[in-house]
Image 1 (cartoon, helix red, strand yellow):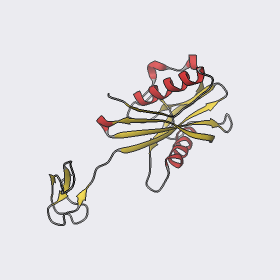
Image 2 (spheres, rainbow, N blue to C red):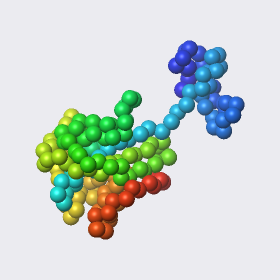
Image 3 (spheres, rainbow, N blue to C red):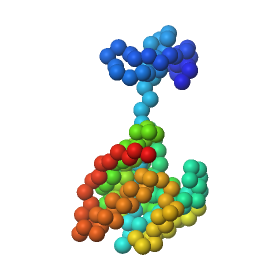
Length: 177
């Protein structure tokens, strides 16, 4: 960051009084510009014994498989963001959602919040950001074509929990990539 979004004057990195981290601070109006992690919200949609994955039509990781998920927008809850992304990417509606996985990825300043949910019906299709959308049984999951470590970890949690009497307690983990 070079200039203040409040007054347009130059900023510099300094540790504001009472803080313990370097921040961009305006040299004129003293506005502190905080930079915080991005929230990615998504859903692991399930129908019967299969999960729904989307093949990405965009970068990064074009052509690889992922869960429907994306950056949370201002003025929406994490569940609203997850539902919106599921509609945008998979043209799917879900129900019985509950927060299932929280994955922090400090190296890239992202936090993933993935809900476990049931598809309302086996009705889905590719949105603008997907090449195709498909239901996969566990043995059909294209593990070598999974787009992100966070998606792989979420799927690992899900299949492990499903094998344990369908008990799906919430997971919270930090990924060091």
